[in-house]
Image (cartoon, rainbow, N blue to C red; front, top):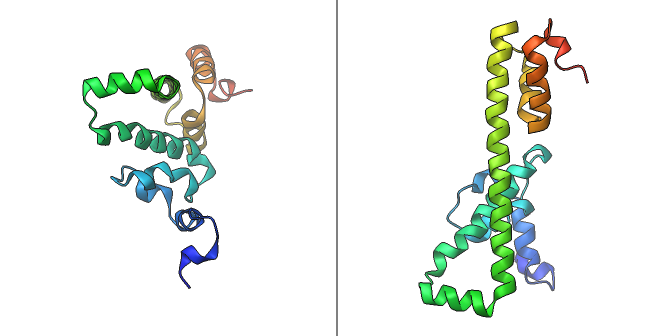
Length: 157
């Protein structure tokens, strides 16, 4: 039986098909429908942010395919101000999140170097904590790492 006959909802077959797919397999796909539906695909909970970010990148690429002239862009911004404002705010928030992630990764890298220099190569569990910590926590650990007598003293929460 064809998949589309299973529901009155014309998009139900799409949701069903997407749930069978692995999200990572469609990262960077030129298929915008697949990219926008990445959150509907299978992915580990630990990858939710990466999946969301990739879907947002797909949304931002819609503009590439529109081929609007400068005049058409101006008309769009005038006639569809709420949408234009929303997408601008969305893009700004996405960029800020990307900057924060990049900042945290850089801080984690520097902290890993400091820990290695002071205490030897950190364990896999420490590496995992560094990769998942936010910038504020990394800054706290960095300050502790400067003077801590033992590695355990840095991560005492």
